[in-house]
Image 1 (cartoon, rainbow, N blue to C red):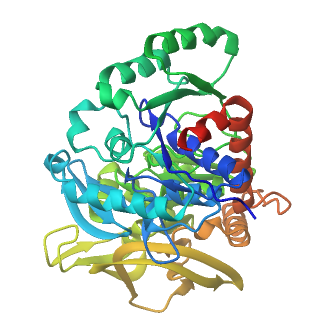
Image 2 (image 1 turned 60 degrees about the horizontal axis):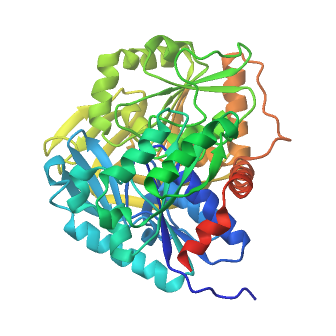
Length: 490
């Protein structure tokens, strides 16, 4: 029986967004689990449109869901008590303990978050009371001194719960030494006293060349280096930034002409973009995020992903010329699939009686390619779903206000419909199921005249994710003084 340790928590902060906080927390959770520690992840506030539904119907960020997997614990809303989902440049929809919690306007970001802090810190206390160790992930940078007064997820959390802070800097983007020193220098004395040390992330090269710089940082700040984590290829952990999905190819990158080409429309308010990561994990499938109509036309498969602002992104789709491409592909019998918001765009009409996205009572014309009417309900649907397609077991999760009603008979596709080359479903995560994904892609390839066929002997999606968590944990143990970090919280 594993001895229960007396531990509290630790905060992993970053010198910037995308410095590697989520990656380090994921790896630390797995390493702690290997050592027999009852560990759990925590992020007080996450701002992301990439989310997941837990078994109890609560919604949290996908990064925290994955970290819970790494820790070997059941994901719950306490692990991400505040989730902000940007709807416009000046408004975010609040998910509080996994359920809708109103909106947060830009002007309220520094003044209107007291109640959010109370909920977040209560969730931390809940986890700390029932687990040996809480590994917390910060948000953005702790040196955003303009936001310090209302901060409850970086140094505000660390001060409130007396957490040692490990600072992560990304050397791949350049300026890591200045970022480490600048973060230390901008903090006040009480915050600075909690900085326990730092990790340099995404290093490619000879450690000896970097060593003098790290020694100087330690001399000037007193912060020790816990190690230098190398660039780990082939890792595509779920990110918070919906426009930076690790497995996607971007415009202008080279492509193998024999690949099955999948184009994913990059909506301005794209949501749950991770839906197609599983496709990108298949050998010979090229997934490209794009706003280029020509790329959308040339692809073998065109994906309209989820959107946090379906009506606004539908208007953008028309302005961009991609709506015309979608209609032309349907006429030509070329595959288009819409997921959640993308599915709703393919329908005939969108009704908004309560003004969820438009003025109350509005009726918005969809692309009209599927015989379905969408009704934006006041109540948000958060659920795990299960079913079959062609006898194949499939599961997914639902996060939406739109309720779809078929207006005429059409072939069922999961919970949605399929008419000719056009497919629609409200289920996120369906393509993470190996047999379903490979069967559907093989049909799409044959329809496109592509020679691509799935490799059934390859690792499946979940097995690949587990292997990546193990790879990250191995890299952390090999290059970072993990024991020293874990002993910070005894």
